[in-house]
Every structure is written in structure tokens, then in C-alpha cells.
Length: 431
Figure 1 (cartoon, rainbow, N blue to C red):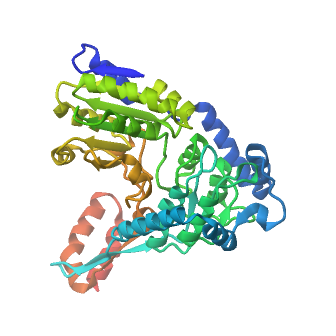
Figure 2: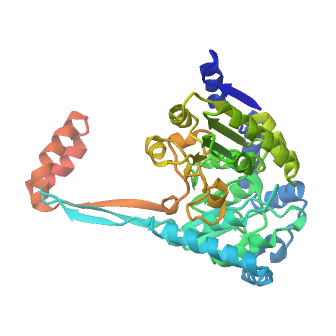
Figure 3: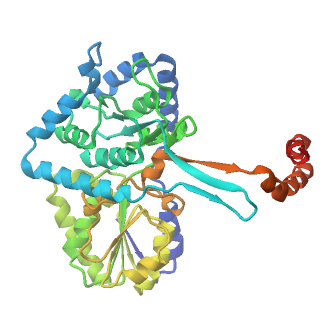
């Protein structure tokens, strides 16, 4: 675990190394993924069958049931849930849907002072691919967070994929598919699933956009296929930054840090505080709490390798540091978080006040939990309905409009050495 103090002479150099450190795929992963993409594109279903057998120990045969789950299986899983779990998933879906419905953009259509009609229309993509992790853990929440915005956007065909190691899948994922209104969930995962979605196979029709979190191979496959399809982002290991003063309960803050550490050994949890004694208490509680977790091996490995505590003279120093870290999740565990929120520029999602743990955002708050990692919050945003839509601009000039703006277009076309461009305007103006 890394301990930094802003008063130390070497603080800047050590903090810069923290900011620049990468916890993502290496060259070996890139090469392996490139080979998988190439082979699936060439061989289609046959290569998907082979890779699923090798990596998931699941046999895809001629029967549909080995390839996908459908509405009947979704409904059975939903009906079999205990009431509290079913209610929890329903509540999460309702809140996610309401939040994303408010994101729907409006078309524009107006005529300007030159008499030119201008505007833009928003339309959903034809087909979206949703990746649902299914290896280290099962995430029904991720299915809801990806499928519901696609539905709200108006996507007509949503293709969900999730690995089923040894043929097994968490029934909560199937129940979430029922709530989201999916027609089919394909039993494939990894880079081969991303390739199948992007290129299409004999069984799986290609899609236009692929979203959803996954391991290093999934993230790298999305990165390499960007341009063949649209993607939400290249997601790396999860991360949390907690900015907290000494008035917090150290147990609460320790639990918040561990909530991300337990995701993956490469996850990162960072605390910034102006109280060194409080920081020591949090560190102690992390040790105690992690030892009691069923996920303790992963959580402790993450904390020991990537956990960081930063002590500053005053919490005013925290926001510039947070902006450089551009973390996926940022908790502002202070009495009055609003001034700090107003200054903060770079974060995937922000959690305001002592009573707002990041974990509530993972499930039931409403905003999307698919967020930029690896310092990408400097230029990227969380998943939204806009990831499943595209905007088409339009214009209508007419005689008066062309008279008003055509000469400038002709002048610029000649200046760029493109006479056919100029001629296409000139001919109409002459008429």
C-alpha cells in the first residue's frame, strides 16, 4: 500500500508516477486478442465453438439451448427469485429507466436569419451488443445498466452475450434479462464474443455498437474493433477515490475503499484526507474488514498492490489532485461537498456527502455505473442513451438562402483549390 504526504519533498514525483501508472492489458494480451479477432472473422461459429470449449469448458452444439437462453428461461429465473431480490431488481430497473429517459435528446428544426433551414434528428442504431461479465462474478446490475439505456434509446435489436463457465450462469442475470425485456442471451464471452458481435457469424448477426464491461481481453477486443463498430469506452480495472475529512467514521470509509478493491486484483482504491491520524485508523479498519470478506483474497491483493493514502495539509489541495487522477468514482465525504463538487472537473461519477456510498450507485441510484477508468474521465463520460444513438444533421437552402451564403461558399471552395465545389454552387445561383 502506497502512503503519500503532500509535505514531502518527493511528493510531486511520486504522485506523478501514481497518475501515470497503468493497470491494464500488456502486449501479450494485445497479440492474443488480435489473433482471436482474426480467427473468429475467418471461421465464424466454428472458432467461437472452439474458443468457448477452451476458455469456458462449455460445449456449443447444434441445439439452441447450448447457444442461448430465451424468454422462457428468463421468466422462470425471475419467478424463482426470493421476493426481496425480485423487488430489488425491479426497483433498480425502475430508477435506471427513469434516469435514462430524462437523457433523451431533442431534435432541432429552425430557420435562421439568412432563410436557411437547419436542424438535426436523433435516431437509435439498428442493433446493439451488450456484454455481461460472467467469469470472476456475475453482474445482473451490469445487464440492467446496459440494456435499459439501449431500450430507452429505441434500439430495435439488442444482442446480449455472457460467458457461462462450465455451462453455469447466475439466475439473477437471467432474471435481469427478463426485467430488461431481452429476447436472447448468448452463452459466449471473452474476446471471441466481441468479435462475433462486431463481424457476425453464421448464427449471430453483427451489431452497430458494443457496450459493457469485461476483463482485459474484452476491453482490448473493443479497443481493436473500434471503427468496425462503435463502443462505449475501453474500460479497465475499477477505481475509487475518496476525499474525506477526519469527521468520518473510519469503518465507513474503509468499507468504501474495499467496495472497489474486491472487484479485481488490479482495482485501485485511493483516500485523500487532511487528517493523518484518521488515515491511520482507516488503514487499520481496511486490514480488519478485508480479513472478514469472502472476497478477501482479491480485496487484499488489490489494496496491497494499488491502494493509496494521500495526506494533505488542507482539503483544498484535494481537488487539483483528484482532477489529475480523473477517477471512475469520486466520493466527497465532507460536511459540505457542493463547493468541492463545483471545482471538480474530471470524474466518472461523483457521490456527495458522508451518507452517499459509491456502492449505492452500482445498483439502485439511477445513473449508469459503466464509467470511464484509467484516467479517461478527463475526456470521456459514463454510458448513456447517447451511446446507442447518432445525430443526423439536415439543411434546406432555397433561392434566398443560397443568395445569402452561396458567394462565401464559392470563395472558400476556390481558396481550397476545389473548383467543382464552387461550380456546384455557382450553377444554382445562376439559375
